[in-house]
Picture (cartoon, rainbow, N blue to C red):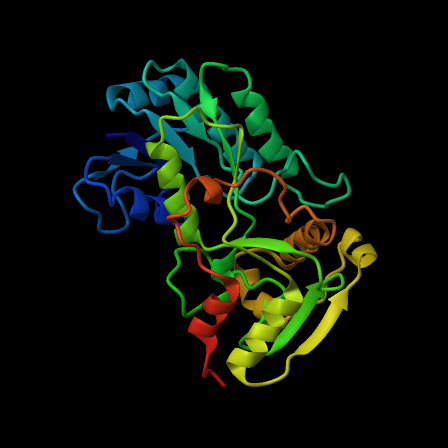
Length: 316
């Protein structure tokens, strides 16, 4: 049995992790929240812990009194305020007498192995969390790198707790603004598959590596567009954004971006799309390393083509 605390467990990836971890009745899952009650119905082995991220002593006491063994952070967005909250959580976990493992909110790419010109505004925030963890050698940690979330290519039809974010290929509008040539290999993983692998990590007695690589599928954007065109039964209007334009923060707007401006300001969203585009074109999303998939072949990951065909076939 493992007692697990999930920071940010009320939505997005965190909620997906909670859904998977609580499938084992022997685990006790604690959702760390600023509110005293969960916003969703949960089984008996899921509990809500109201916390104050500004107080390290209070956090430490909460982790110790509930005998938390593993902390998983999915805190988002990576703002300075969230950075401070996560750093306080790391300090509290390290100083507690119960927490032995910590998964920081890195999810995505390896932010220590990227192009210095990748314009991702939260790169420094991600790196500083690892710098904080390095201060506590007794606390095991691993950065989970799963590439881009596949969920976005099945929205709004697919099952997902993620906020809507339609990157580069607007399947509903039959339009695409592809970073670079479209032939670069990119790693994508469905959040449900990420959760299955994280559960394997939590349940393993092996010492964690500092980096854990997960791959649901590795495909090019040309392959994504081809699958989408077949599913929709029509040709897409496709443009390509050059690496130079992406480095300058220039990205072609697709219709699917506009509704998202209510959540992320236009300038921020397009900068994010440009930054990820640079990372994709320069190979940062094509991971090199030992994958957790190899250790757990029983986890059958979702493939991008199947995913698109499942949720878009016949939707003309």
